[in-house]
Amino acid sequence: MKGSTHRRCYCRDPKTGKPLGKNCPKLSSRKHGSYSIRQELPPREDGTRRSFSRAGYETLKEAQADLDHVRALLGLAESDDPEALARIAHLLETVAAEKAPLPNIESTRRRLSHGLDLISRLTVGEWLDMWLAGKKGRQSAISRDESNIRVHLKPRIGHLRLDRLRVSHLSEMFEAIAEDNVEIAEGNAARRKAFEDLARIPWKGREPRARRKAMKAAIADMEPYRRIVGPATRQRVRSTLRAALNSAIAQQMITFNPAAHVELEAGKRPKALVWTEERVLHWQRTGEKSSSVMVWTPEHTGLFLDHAADDRLYALFHLIAFRGLRRGEACGQKWTDTHLDAGLITVAKQLVVDGWEVYEDDPKTDAGARTIALDADTVEVLRQHRARQDEEREKWGTAWVETGRVFTRENGELLHPANVTRRFIELYEEIGLPPVRLHDLRHGAATLAHAAGADLKDIQEMLGHSSITITADTYTSLLPEADLAIAEAAARLVPRARAVSGIGAREVEPKTEEAEESVPDGTDLSVEKPGPGKASADAPRTPTAPDEESAGRA
Image 1 (cartoon, rainbow, N blue to C red):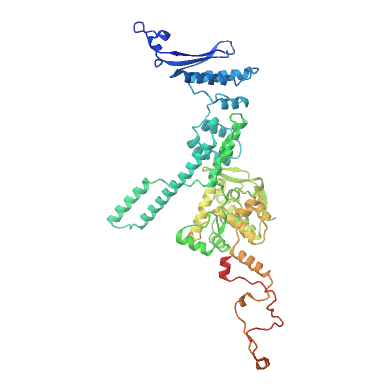
Image 2 (image 1 turned 90 degrees about the horizontal axis):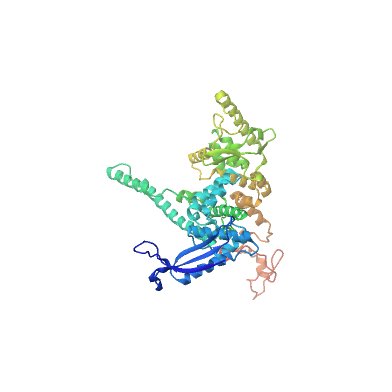
């Protein structure tokens, strides 16, 4: 197919106004005019001719380079593959019409060999919207993906071409998120400091009132509290993007998934810690928790349950504290799945919060659908709760909303899980207990079961985990009493010839007159003779516990 370069200008005849074209007398100068290229393309399906034309090159070298580029693109198609040649011709025709840059030869070769669209201009943001609209599955998972796309992905990489997304783009995105975390932390600290300063200003007096007014105005101008995007959240953002790009690969829109190759800090599960006296004192002094997941001691749990005994949601808190149900599982529990005579409940449904809307769904995992045994006290608590609910049903009469749930509002309507959490916080704050989340009662149930002798497999089945690793890594913490008992039991396994309390104290036997008379002159009295129960100087010594100084060096 023919192709050529030529030089032309846009000068016009001053008399007629028509372009002079090749007749321009100034074309004899190399600095006048510009170069153009024209390459013949395969004809259209109806037989009409078409070509690739482009002008405005300052030098012949630039024009020739683009002409060679066009010819190289046409050469990507095999001579016996007219369909590929037609696709490349359509690509070049579109590029010429849009005055877009010539596509990369190697990229076009890959797309052509994989059967991908050669003229795709789809952006990452557009594809994420398309992928999310067609996604099926749990509403909670879809909502999480929607949040990741709206908050993180579209604002940062949504403008990029989907087929040009690279690992470097994602690395820059996550580095920018980490930099924003620093600003968020500083802003939160400044806002917290401002509130502390405001609390120290007296209420009375003209000057204090003016200072309080100025301080409130300054706080109003500050950024609101924002959450840090931690390692676990960044992992979830990458997971959303990786799933969307895998779908694009399946639809032959791209050939490479950069989200699968970007390196991120591992999102480790927080380890649950028990609210020991030392940790409670530290929290009271500084307001800091030793872990994001804290567990009450049995004494704390007992204080809370005693205080909440008259609350209408007491049975719900009791069930979570002792049998480890999730909040949504407890709110979604039905009487038809509760068998008090047999001492069993079957977890079959849960209530899920999407924004503020509540809907019913299956348990979080396949293992979440489970049957749990109830202790006698919990059975009695649920019987009393059912009697109270029957009284409320009779009181409301025809206005009662029959949902079949174990735990409901006063009129029988579904409980909103967020309101359950709010009531839980109000109750423990009333008696000054250290803060825990409602979900941490579930951690506490696992810890209590572990301390009572249940193995990890039993706890996994009670909590409904799909993997025993989650149970072992997150949900079991040793109570101080159980930890001390284990330490004492381990120490008793080692036989000792001498009591640890006597180590380091020199034993001095009383001297008798008979012994003094039988000692010959010149005998060294500082050396004891071995006897029954005494170790010889040449015998190996029994290992003893190291003193504090040597233990510190170890």
